[in-house]
Image 1 (cartoon, one colour):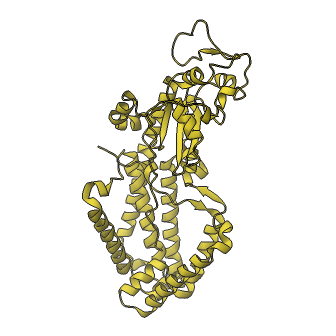
Image 2 (image 1 turned 135 degrees about the vertical axis):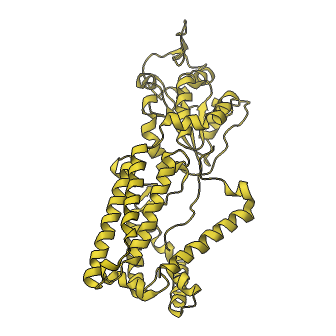
Image 3 (image 1 turned 90 degrees about the vertical axis):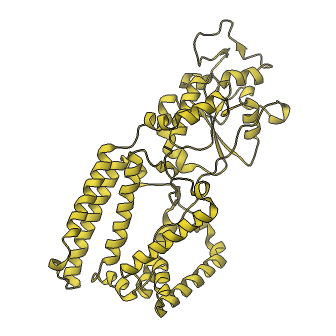
Length: 412
């Protein structure tokens, strides 16, 4: 079974896909209305610690969603790397949160809850929604004045797992514990400032908290799928690509891609450092095969729509193993240098008297089959040939697989 997210458009068509989106939006609005989020006085009461319903409802939705997402990922039903995570712009995000918070206190709504209020024909919700629309217009007209700040402190796809270097299951348990503490603290504030009688609160909330914690604990104990397990799920499809030579690109295509300003080519040389120091392509990054997994978070963090990753070794054996690791972790647009460095040198070092084929090629795979007078790395001419001096016939294989775009989120 293919892991989620499922391609809705391919399953039910574009009309069906938008119908699902509309249904989710309506149900979300209904949940907000049932929770009392269409009433500005109730929303504003949280800032006076009299009614923390907003905190409890929204944070419950967040942590339940988190447990379900990482639980599905742990069971192999969902590939978390395919889920869009809003990129982090630290200081603009802090300032934006402050502005929205002040507006929330003054107006009694956030943009999302104002629409719910307007839908229930409340005048204050209508005025707040109109004000939000006017603010969006002003932002669009003035963003050029502070665009540098707006795009500053960019951290890309940044999660708590990346920040604290902890497994996802551990982070899930810690966040759930933090949420439960906040719920308890919120009730104490309501008791003190809102004179709320906690003895009248439903006992079921305690059972729900216990169930949430046990579910989080299960996520931690199951753990994330291993790279081998991830590869096993996609092996039938991906092995066919390897056999059919769909992902092995000719050195000429790599050279042309490096000269193409529309592409961002990332070259990963997975050979041992000694071979890399002897000779490597200019701009290639040395990541020995046993370290490939460690760079996956940065590859996902820094990826762009036009990024192409090319892995290479002396032949293809180590590069193929690296390709499997990256593909299993859903890193997009990964290719293998056909024939590896040996094939590259065969094409581009023929006229270099310093680089000579070994008289007796070494036995086994992934050995360098050329001799060098010194370990000069990328200072040989063959490390950076001029694309316009060569013309090869090859079948282009690079096809950009665009990363998933934002799907929205939050209450605003």
